[in-house]
Image 1 (cartoon, helix red, strand yellow):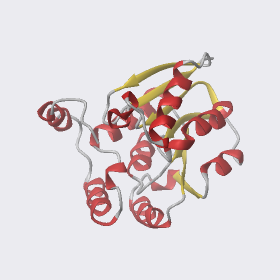
Image 2 (cartoon, one colour):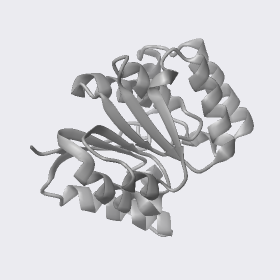
Image 3 (tube, one colour):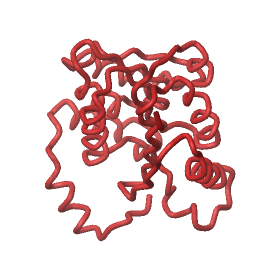
Length: 212
């Protein structure tokens, strides 16, 4: 994954972002020790940013598409009120097993509901309103996820997508995943239903605020 800032500057930003608890450190260490493509896990800066978005939007109901080993779900759950709810989707049973253990250990884990299976099927089973959606799953379905959740997101709600700069490959797309990310970015940019901003946080984050 390409860094979009100088390595020393990136480290400074990391060092000046509130540290994680020991639970997150252990979750990250286990993920890197046991999971394929552990870099898919969000880090301290992105995790704290997601938690901040939850608090700033006053979200009470969140949908996450792409749980992986659970770091981002736990961070967002921390930002929810005690009666808030986060539904997270995944298809990997190994990732699910890790996530469940850490959810059970966390004081915020009771806010999280795991839905295993294709996320598009899960979305069809849900009803709105949803306050915030975080998309971080298979790239070829990004545009499909976006369109599927849009009717469920409340006016003034927020859709956040990860990896939208795709290590810079958006500038010269070659693979199916490359082209899918470029298509998603263009879709959001041209969508009159939202106001959007594309950020260079980590591997790129797209924020799309649904117009009232």
